[in-house]
Length: 581
Image (cartoon, rainbow, N blue to C red; front, side, top):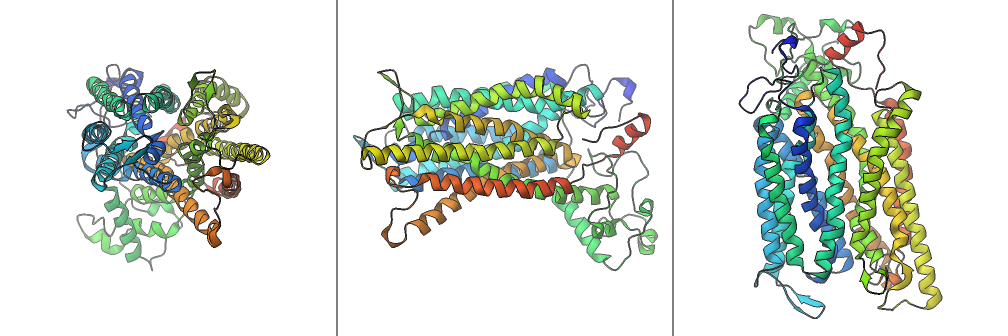
């Protein structure tokens, strides 16, 4: 590695050709516009088709309300499971740049096919009035396109935020401070794309055609590719370090082989390289922690280990390699705490839209706002809250706590969990009022809108947006910061799987609720005619689950200890004080 006074980065990053990166010519905010532009366009494409997808399935694929909602949440969930594939390839073999590049092409292919299913004769369902008659092959083509898109997003989503954060050298105090702000503005760019999607694109889909409504996202994704490639010469790239799954397996096998060996009290006796650099490519050394002591057995150097010339990693692992696995294990309870939150978040594209479909969408005598476009208020909430958080709230809290980030990452996520409870309460209260109006005016079987403005949904969307700024951005930063250096894409993917499991949990809850509440011929909580249902009960259920989840999260957060690298300890020794964050 180049010396610090040579003007090169100290975190092991290289340019695309493998040469050390000059600080003055690469990375930092110089490279970020291309990455943020890519993310903005990619999210515009994703939300441009996903926000209104439930209505497309009901209207053009002739699906029932519950089936359409489940299909959307299943697809959305898959979009957040496939990142495990992309992350593994990025950390192990391809690196983040090439993983993003390859999977963007798959994404564009999926969007092109989806556009064709809504515009090309033969692929497009035949419709008579408001009723469409899709064939099995036409439905299969739509789902093939959607799951190609899910695969494409799997290579982009786990890598792009980590790739952006890689542009800031953690060994440089100024750049390290900027990295925290990057995550805020990264999420800001996501919501700029979502803002356009939930307003302009939903309007096109509703009032022009679905062909144009899906075609515009395809063009936006092509623009995202161009934006990304334009910044190639400015990017800093972390080298792939080989399979993280192999390293994890080695620790487990080595620990099991030495299950009878006693762990020494003096932790300096545990095996670690004497060099400054870790044995793992692209990873700093990690300091030993006292949790999960059984895994420490993997780094005990026995007499048999000392007699061999070459270390067998299936018998003897470094402390850093053991701590890699410990870091992942410690992240899992925090990860689990985000699943219920993601279930709440997922209601914006399903139950919120279905609820909004029954409300009066008129703005003036002629203009009607589509129910799916109400998600614009979630986006506006995020766009408002990100600069408020970054420029006002963090400096204010920093003066009180003395922490550089203001809140700890765990505190930030916990605040978002609390706000999400109020979002479900707001949705439930609105549904109670809506059902009261239906009962009062006997509108159970009315085909017209309920005499209640759709804009009464704004508070529940706004609260979800505020919760996102605290929980989702905090989660992005937390999983990047607390991940082992050589497993950051994998840990980013892990954080994204909470969205997937949240969507799957939503599907499971809808299925269970429907099965239980429709027994003995009853209509149930979520019938096709929501005027005869009890959607409010579903929102109360989510509010209760969210409250229980928050209580469990408090216990987990109290137990968690933040990661320490060898570099962190060196900084502690050379400074008068160091605030733990």
